[in-house]
Image (cartoon, rainbow, N blue to C red; front, top):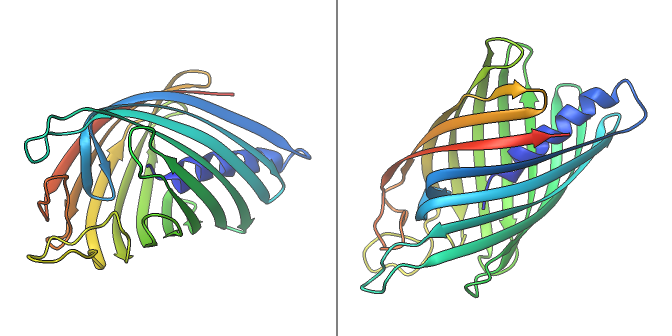
Length: 254
């Protein structure tokens, strides 16, 4: 469970820029990564996240198509006396994007598969991003789960990129999110067995991608999240927790 509209959308956008000088363009990326914890939408799902993924993007003019797969392995915590165990997850996703000037719209689909649990689910999403010439980007993505979790989740963010040179840059991100009826966003209110609707929390992050060889990028990153007090933010039922996530990824593009 990761932010596909950012990952795949960025790849499609890069492909679209190149395609302005050719009839069509195909690009791809494979990556591996590690993080100290697995945080998804302000919820701590476990520790020691090891992940790998592959994405491809094809574009012609302002129209782009993307697809990919993401695999994750992580350790779940001890819950109510039961020993923790290793979990696996495989996500499959695809999207189509269309650029209108500086605004890019994206429509996508995500399938979440959990081989160790009966928690598979599906989402569709619609996103829009606006990029200003001096490195500032605004993005908004609306996710709708039409399967097991049955509900919507809305992420809104702003990003700023500082380019130090052709190989090194600093990426800053901040965002807020809202939800309604989303089964994975449980309510932390005493006696409640429903979902945490409305404001979910805010986050800030920073990444330092370094392309130390042509097409090979090492990216360390940190992220701080602050979940709303009404949102269950771990598998123990606690609400309103803050997290600091640190990780690194290695990507090869082609």
